[in-house]
Length: 455
Image (cartoon, rainbow, N blue to C red; front, side):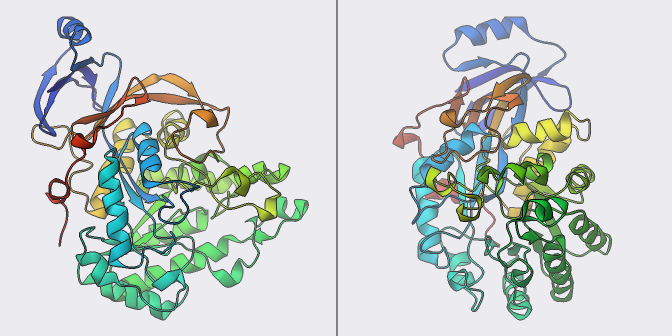
């Protein structure tokens, strides 16, 4: 049994709770800090005095590139799981652009089992929409949905499902089991050789521009397709003010569309590209300050439903080179929460309770991860973490748990320090450090399937 005392909830309550057999077994509310229990917690082996700390449900990421199988030099399921738990995540979603592509039941089951073996967080594979991500023929959507991985989200992320007929067929297919198509909105004909946001800066420094309309035209098309079919659509990594306006319009009409924004698109702008540092090369690209503020406001008012990391690890040789040869992408699992705090809470745009909604509750609901994003009540799975909101930390590449170090936040001081994390009642982070999880503590497949959406 583990006891946590004197923790503060997002609505200002002081609580103590006990964890036993993977679940929250007891919750006690007090009107003030209990110094006696706090002292007992300091002296006890299986107890934490959380005075001065917030207690939150574990974060849920619907957009994570784990690279395994095929690019284990960039990341593995195990290393990404450690990075995820260090960032407060108790569930992540593995994108399909691996080698081989996760377009069959066999590959998604392999990724799922690797996540169970790692034991640091729930790893849910996302299946490819098309075979080989080639955009020509639907992948084995039904087989992946029926597999032990129980795939419910499908995406060709990294590539756009640009054929409208194929996109319609995908939306129709997944509707039969309440699945979800997550679209990488990028018209390939409008982004040939594109390197950065199309605008004043791209013209001045001579890089091929990536127009906002390339994203917005696909968002508009797919919203209309989803409305026509009556199926669920999710828009990955929205970056433009125009995209926000389209999603707002769709929601006003009652169309089943959800959307995500990445932490880096909430904070960074395209002027950082002027020095040609490939660390800022990302797909979709960094946009203008006007776009950043539109994204922040949309996240605050719920037009954009969730934050997703788009964690995209690359080995140093793929980023430490000239701009045009460099890979697109940034790591983000370990910095995500702090960047959102800096851009949204420190700027007074969002409350802690709304942050929990955008980074835990809502993504769990969208994906059907029933063990995640739950209130901290008796009987709920013990997926939670403690956070010191007043502390700050300095981002250092060599201290990241991810196998790759391509963070754009190197040397930046960020707010909010995660001190302790529990995944299904097992402590995975203690004093801000990863705790080795014994194989005997890894949860079996049957336990993970309990309560998972199988509809």
